[in-house]
Length: 342
Image (tube, rainbow, N blue to C red):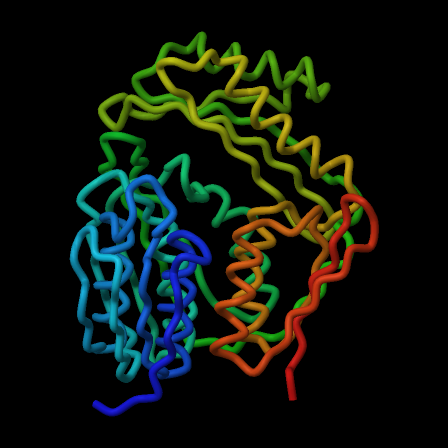
C-alpha cells in the first residue's frame, strides 16, 4: 500500500500525541510513522492502553501496522477504509477506556454505518478523564457540534484492578464549528464521592472538606456507593453546570493520601478555573481541540497554554489544513481559535 506517510516525533508529548495522530491518520487516510513514543515518561513506549488504542484503530480502519507491541517506541500505521460496526476491545489492565474511546470516535463519525464499541479496563483512572467527564462535559459539546453519540457506563473499573466496561454508540455525523468565549452563569453545582470497598467515612471527610472550602450546601453533596466487588476505589467528582457548558473535576483516593488532601487537590483545580474568566478548564480545552479542527473551525477560552494543548496543536497542524492561533487576553485567559489555513 503506497501512501503519503507523515513522520512525527513522539518526544514532543506523551500518549496523547500518539492518540491524536492515530485519530487523524484514520480520518485523513494519511499514513503515520511515529518515533520516540512517550520517550520522556518514566515508562516510555506503548503501555497496555496505548497498545489497545493502536490495535483498535487498526481494526476500525483495516490498517497495516508495524511496531504494535508493549514497550515499543516506534510505530508505522497505514490506514485503510473506516468501517462502522460492532466492536469489543479489552485493555487487560486498569488502563483508561475513555482514552481509547476518544481515539476511535473521530473516525467512527466518518464511517458509513453506525457503530457500537465496548471497551473493558479502567473507567476511573487518575491519568485520564473518568467516564463522568466524557458523559457530562465532553460529549454534550460534541453533540452541539453535530455528533450523534451516546455513552453507557456498564461497570466501574478502578486502579489497580480494572474490570470496568463502557459502551459507545456512534451514528455517522458531520461536525460543525463551535465557539465558547464564555461559560455563562452558574446553573448548578454538586460534589459526588464514589466509593467501592472503601469506608463510608472517607467519602464524608472528602465532602466535608468540599463544603468547607467551596460553600456547598448539604443537598449539593452526595455519596455513591458502588458494589465493593468492583473496588477498592474512591473518586471525588466536582461538577459545575453553567449556561454554555459543564465542567467536571476529579480526584482519586489512594491508601497513602488523606481524604482531605484528595479533596483539596480537586478543589484547587476547580477554584483556579472558577476564579478565571475562561470558558473551559485545562483538560477539556485539550479534548475539544481535535473535534474543532475536524469541524474546520471553532474557538474557546481557557486559563493557560498547557503542554498537552501545545503538543496537540503541533500534531493537528501537521495533518489538517487548519491554523490554530492562541492569544493571551489576560493573566488567566487564553483564547484559542481554529481556522482554515487556506
